[in-house]
Amino acid sequence: MKISIINKLEKLYKKFKDIENMLTQPKLIHNQEKFKDLSKEYLRLSNLIKYFLKWKKVNKDIKLTSKLLNDLEMLSIVEEELANFREIKNNLENKIKRLLLPHDPNDKKSCFIEIRAATGGDEAAIFAGDLFRMYGRYAEHCHWSVEVMNCHEGDKGGFKEIIFRVTGLGACGRLKFESGGHRVQRIPQTESQGRVHTSTCTVAVIPEVLQSENFKICFNDLKIDTFRSSGAGGQHVNTTDSAIRITHLPTGMVVECQDERSQHKNKAKALSILSSRIHAYEEDKRNKENAFIRRNLLGSGDRSDRNRTYNFPQNRITDHRINLTLYCLDDVLNGNLDILIEPIIQEYHADFLSQYK
Image (cartoon, rainbow, N blue to C red; front, side, top):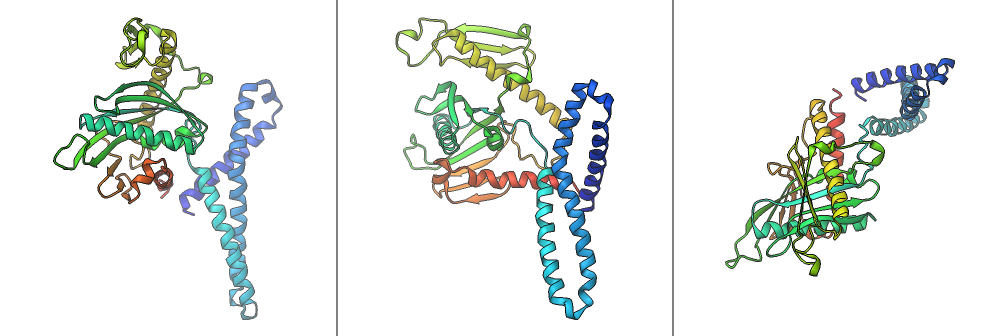
């Protein structure tokens, strides 16, 4: 392991022992909140320290055993012992590195995904529909559920915009790297001369705010408009002002919801999306102030981001953030997203650990 990692572990060990000492103080029992916080921190550090102490012991065993290499009669036994110790050391280092990775409280949450057609007109909207189906199939593989919150259909199919909730443990942690620009290269259905066109969509993945987080919006900051729904729906459409548009005045964020027949249900959906957006926006500002990751693997959902290119003529998909190219586009569009998600998670973790020089 790098010296910087060892130094960090030594500091964490000292912190662990300090917390252990504090938890034995009788006075702490009267401060339940502090006792609870210290207990959580002690539990969080305990596994890491356990592996670190084992690593120190096996490192010491390697040094002592290496001194016996000059004994020719014992050479084969010593080499076998050293190989065993090094394997144990390597396994311990991998466990320690995993535990050193930052804990993102959003990773276990459900999330909202917003897909918008950007450049390319009707073809971009059709591609937005392809992306929605891709994420839907991936959710099925992961046993998550998908609920459409709001959508505006394209004139030739697909969606100009679609917002949906993906509900399931770990959904946000797996999908958060999807935020950013997605580019498609193919012959559009609307192309008569067989030319390949390039169109783009943007994807934004937003962690769902939990009720336990007590995140509240000031209703004085909201402008709420009602209007009549558009699209399919029989007599209900254009007869009832059930659709909702909420504008958050300080940030200018706007959320519309018209999928439900009830105005109250549309309002509840719109508020859940808006609160998650505002919470994510504030978290993003904090993260930028404390940023340490050199490369921006977590996309912002802006048009300027370019995550991937989906090239249909060559059945090729490229993730530009990590220079990964695979020739299995059909497989990915059918929901096998793990072959793209796993490499970028590994790269994300490697970027974090690289801060230790």
